[in-house]
Length: 160
Image 1 (cartoon, rainbow, N blue to C red):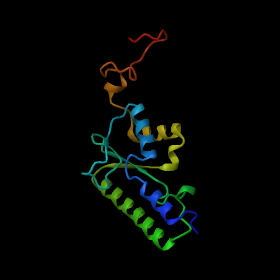
Image 2: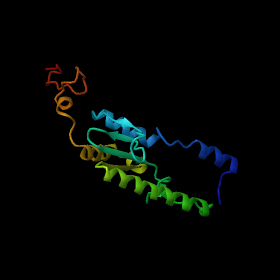
Image 3: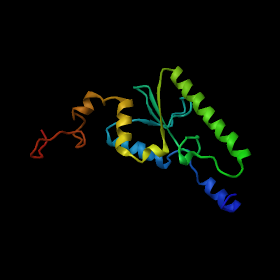
Image 4: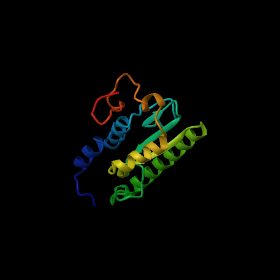
């Protein structure tokens, strides 16, 4: 039994976005702070990956646990209208699998980040860095137009 009125449930469901979601923004901010640059929602790639690294041929999907059927507590089926939700969420999972397979057949590496995995930023940063590998030598050496984020300083705090 739903605890919301049909009008309340409708407003809640209409507010759900398909891009620039909270979990996606967490991943994007983290990637940017780590020095990675990327493209968003490429229409020319199967499944429109949330984040794409064209030169590396790597794609990242950031999935909401409920909408994509993750096995965590946030991914549980609702208790009402199972005749509607079960086929819908199963179709989402099948589409995700199919689009990931298409990307892989084109030579792309694919990583899926689940909404529940965005809570631990340290672990997420390690996972993203492991998937993407090191940044380019120019960025890692600090030779990028004087950006303080990539500039190494000695113990006095002065830049080299």
